[in-house]
Image (cartoon, rainbow, N blue to C red; front, side, top):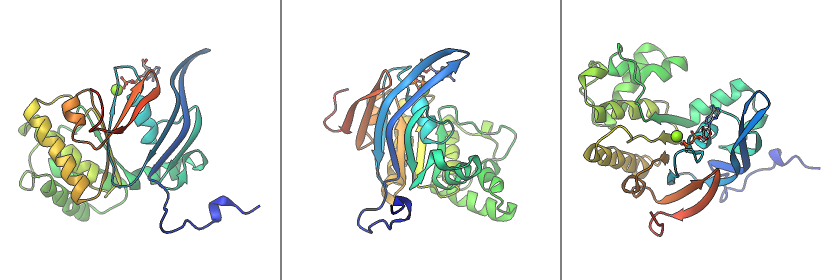
Length: 246
Ligand SMILES: Nc1ncnc2c1ncn2[C@@H]1O[C@H](COP(=O)(O)OP(=O)(O)O)[C@@H](O)[C@H]1O
Ligand SMILES: [Mg+2]
């Protein structure tokens, strides 16, 4: 039998960035099993801009944690950028994650006592890049999100929207193919949310970064081109945002 992993991928049909098949996830507490995801199939191609919606408790964050290799599924297959996640060691999985994915969270998650440039540089330092080069690359990403002159400030010296831009700069600093953002506008007012979504749109169009965003708000989801709706751990809609009911 030829090993399928060894066969060449045809150039016109490269592997998708993400392919999940029959993903199930339960949380266990002692003998008690709480099933949360009940069989998710999801394929995401490079360059897509996808919004994930669903009621609180429907499994959005659980799904994002699996997509981000921060948690493992109970069963099913998850292929990230051509690599079968279950077949990688923890170290290899961490390497694929660091190279492929940038994370953005609702609460920004900046280190309070650290200047913005160093907050952004941190993932590069973890990856073994020198301080000097890490700061240079961090300043470029701050400039890309409109904060080129803010490097020396501390997080409490800028607004919430600016803090989220810093977090997006940090997510970009390792040049990921994919940004995973779990309710990135959840702590922001309407105008600032629009600015952040315009930034994601620009990164998607100009830098060709694939974007996956979880949101409660139809007005935020409408910036995406594809909508995935979850209900009780199952996908109930997967299609264009334009044709979707909100
Ligand atoms: N670490 C955990 N241990 C046990 N149950 C969890 C854990 N994380 C989430 N859950 C449960 O899984 C369900 C889905 O949670 P979550 O994925 O956070 O949903 P959402 O992000 O859509 O609000 C909820 O019922 C939640 O209580
Ligand atoms: Mg959540």
